[in-house]
Length: 440
Ligand code: ATP
Ligand code: MN
Image 1 (cartoon, rainbow, N blue to C red):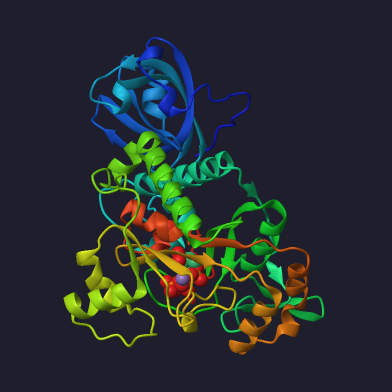
Image 2 (cartoon, helix red, strand yellow):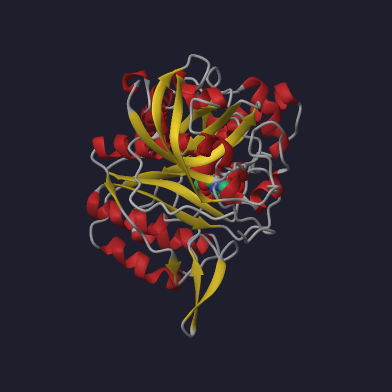
């Protein structure tokens, strides 16, 4: 089969723009064949683009014989259509297009590796192997439309609140929080690492720009095999000068509220596709706040799971807790011993000015007040068994009037998992990296 040239054809509209306002007009659409049906004298094509879908209707005798007889159709063929807009109540958007010409720009094998009609579900690994195709599915289009809205709304919220967007290096010369979870790389003839967080740079820049944020990649070399861990993640990092943890708790819950409001306003259709319109609701502010000690108490009393004071909270305990605390909530004042060196100890130095944001059993964010005094920071490093010499250039920035500051890091994919009701974090990134998966 020979292919057509796009030549001077250009789309006049996106599918979603073809509404009843355009009835009677000629439009040019382009996209992929999601589905097609041949009923003898009648052929239907579901044309999808990245904005929605519209029905193309070919009726024998209505469209030209040449078009009716000679148009070869296949799943996910890339096509452009020129045709007239007609009202048709049962089709997407209440519209059908009566084509005068169809161009087949590219075709596909007879059998696709995954089902794209949405009629059956395909194993996630097989889908990920064919990710660029898989991402065209209705479900994936919805997930990533929500991600787009999340990022856009988060940026809008932050810019509106006088934050400045920063870009920090992803190739670093020394470990951020200890040397364990880093990917080493060669930097010419030296060893370097992929960054595990923007932590140190965003702290430095809070002493310059005061309110900073970054949405960027971090790399975690953990061989985790869970449904919530990836080796490459995108984090939303926020750092605020002249602030402490309480300011950050407030900023974060307001940001979450604003983002969900925008998703509900602008992506309700996507939430519906994912059957989340009754679940991803505006949360009540402020979020419930529990101290680490209170949570331990709750776990011991209500869940009957023993946790030693000073230990991290186990996945099993979080899972039980979800029955009691299904929404967004904060856990504050963690034991200092399990928090990184840059976190400020509380008045009682067994505890720290730190928090996690939970949504049910899933940790979405960690943050806290930072240490801004250089001497204090040096002893904190030593206490964690880290060598202050390795942090010299970072420590030097604390000589020049570093303000008190606090901040957080939030995993975008974790949050998207929650917002979309996904059961595996790999569904929330376009190309997941896990210990096993380095392609595509
Ligand atoms: P966890 O205990 O769940 O492994 P963490 O406490 O090690 O997470 P942080 O260093 O606090 O993670 O990172 C900040 C946020 O980044 C987390 O709250 C989470 O949302 C996200 N995050 C961290 N590690 C991963 C990962 N490996 N995969 C996906 N998201 C992650
Ligand atoms: Mn954490």
